Length: 461
Ligand SMILES: [Zn+2]
Image (cartoon, rainbow, N blue to C red):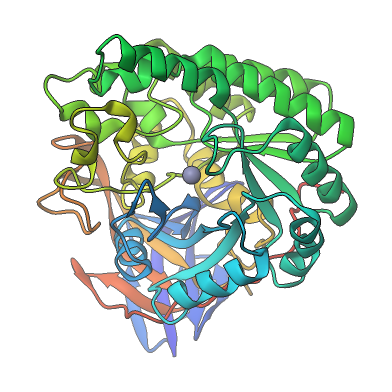
């Protein structure tokens, strides 16, 4: 099966060029000057549109257990929504529970995901129980294509790891070539502030933000960086939200340390003011780290331009407003932490191009190419080039749309961006050569997506 995408502007991380793209079965067969190829089974006219490598969302949580409930997207619904938004690969987190092994965790997550995803997927592993067996099993995980391990400096009693435990896992990462991903917030100090707020009778959602001040994200980020320096481990800071943390990352990178960071669309577009919306409305915006005051946003955009922030992922972890977020109606600390977003990352970042915050090429780089390299998927993913998987998005930069829970495809009853006008829209999406989205309809299927066994991070020598 040969599909020819004609006359579009192919946008790679190296920049835009007008070219034809031939899809041959599951891969890209050729990228040529316009008009060179004349024979194909199907043709798509992409004149005036962008032809992008499919988006890679390196941070999602489908069906994730949290606070006695589960994030509301399954692997089936979440990957379908991702495809609607031009994302053709997710990397989700397998979550080790205390007292279980990493390998049993990996099996459990394969059982949840295998045969259900509409697009390709990989896993990271969350280590919540650092012990001799877990440390040993890191190598087995790597052998099975899962070579990035997330740890938490917050959530005492659930995911929290002590500095000593982090140090041990980092030493193991140095030995094996694995990447440590860090949720960097000083959870011990935060728990005190939360207890004090509740004791004073402050129960509203905005307290979630006020009890997690940006300084405590900055402190934990700095501490993680120093632990990485001592152990020689590469470090990837997940969902960076605060200027304080960005400064620590920039300083480490300036000294040549292998420190990388991602941010998320919610930190670029939403703020503490959303958490402070009247009544219980703010619960829709409860995620950790929390949304910061608005004046952090220009720093995050600058970080994306200077590459101190290399990736934008969503941390997609949806909980319905009704029944799920409502668990915290009388106590903000019981609101499940997480926001939906997997469907809108490409569109929201395109607004950065429209607004002149980032270039067209940088949009593709932070949303597809760098995540592919960071997590060992390049050049199979993250580029429009011969031999790459035909994960291709035809994007109409002039179409407009309005984000709404009425029209989105994520399995959640609200949108954090309700009513936001967007310039640009996904037109057609291919996943390994199969048409998934076209003519405003879903043509994919549950189970088309395959598990991606990943190589080590390609940013490390
Ligand atoms: Zn997360």
